[in-house]
Length: 359
Image: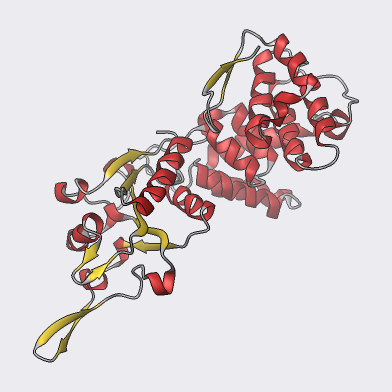
């Protein structure tokens, strides 16, 4: 399932905890695909705390607590890391990460916590959602087969890397536009992990975020830049990205385009992708400013100049995901839409319509 849909599921399950309708959710996926980040994103959207428990690092007693004598009885000291309404709040997310890497004795201790929301006398506060994540057995991580009794306590979703969703996230988090442009140009490199070869560095949504940081740190040191890029996404993808960056010297003047004075359209496909990503970035920065409509209008005018109309559709689709439906009210949108009336715009990131034919 694509990340936008997973986020919607997690958000609804978070509300379900308030309503007494929550079912624990298990996210499956390869390393670096963004499972943990999606859980954190949902919690941040509700301004709710996340208690992240790495089960792979625990012993059974760490979860169950330590027994102590109370008169003639034995009671259990509840671990302080578990959600408590007084200390942590009445709502939040209990995130059991790396659950498939936990020893069977630890996962067995979690059975009652996950399904019954309790461990002995301890109870998870009603407003807390329970999410878990782990790698699949074929992902070359340290994993155990999930026991059937534990698996039956979750609803299960497999997380897929999806370029449109990642691009929308990247524009919203100020990821370097050159990285976005490169992945639009080479979409198959968003996630490229071959567990048979067990690579150390490989392209993934997580490692492309590392690449963004590397560009910020090493762009002024060309003798280190290639090595830094390869350290993030692997040797082959690092070389391709460096070659892509070197060709951006021929990029047209982006300021001139958003000012309504565009020069000639670049003929090279990689430069067209770079222009499109840069223009979406400018639209994001103009959002809410006094010249917002003017910038959007000039970008829409430029979108109609691409030799391949699909390139303009990609640009406008990405811009709409980033800045919202205000785009549709502009006269330039109507003019552009007429020129691509037989091209489909797919938009699953935001609310329906999921697939809208431009009119």
